[in-house]
Image (tube, rainbow, N blue to C red):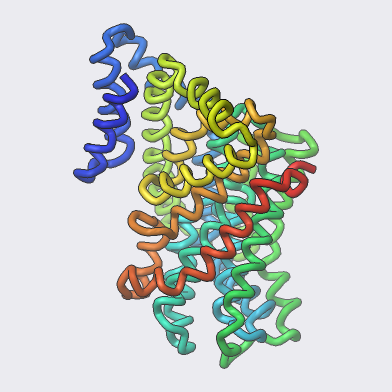
Length: 413
């Protein structure tokens, strides 16, 4: 049954069927072929995971990010980043990295961040004389930091797969997110300063203007860690926070912005929920045939060493991440890797951070890297020109991935 599902899924992807539909068709065909599962039960399995209360956090965090990023606050964040690092060598690239890190604390979505930030900063970088390929590369790679800085949508998805604490995952992912940012900023040092670099005298003013967004990730972690609110409640509070900031502080809230944010949220949430529903059906097939347990036992018997098993998981994720979007990959690989991690004594919090970093690399890796394509389209350059500029960023991401994979103290504290 699993072989039929895997083969059909690969064939459907090869003819460009969307991932959610491909998963449903492949899993449905496997269930019908096996014949042991009633059709009604299969339909229940399809819709059951979408009724999860914690998953309500996803659309509300997306909505809060859309409301904050689409207004004046987005410009204030860029101005703050320019004032903070624009005076250094490679300032324009560093502005992109810092902006991505801050935006990550607002949007929680690498794709949304690459689109919003790239449309502002890639033309600016090109105007400052940066190669178009590099401008696209730094945007495509740094936007994936949003997968780690709270509120991270991938971490919320992993928490539902592993039944782990969202608060613990959010706290554990901050350090690797900052390490990625630091490494990518170093990569940018080869370029000159901005011609109109931000000065220290404007730093305090720009920081105050951007403070509402800068406070967002700390605000989220504080409420979760202190037990004041659940993740879903925090996401609703974040929406009201975004509305109040736009309405009272920046006074740029319009019905058009609200409508655009709602439409974008519905579309994005619909895509994510379709993949969640489809992955549940796939999970039913895998669990029925005990695939996670079989794979975990095989890894222990064949590889033996936890070091080699972790290496194997990373290699599998790097390959899968090149072809599948991050949410789909987490939901598909999560149950099996959680079983393997449990077998070797790996903490699920460390595993979740490792998975998110690994699969985030796939977002700017060919042949189907989402942020890679977004950056190339905005910069109007071929994919190959962007990939040539991405090698230093790959090295930084790989170094952080290795540290998070083999040093538990960096994520468990």
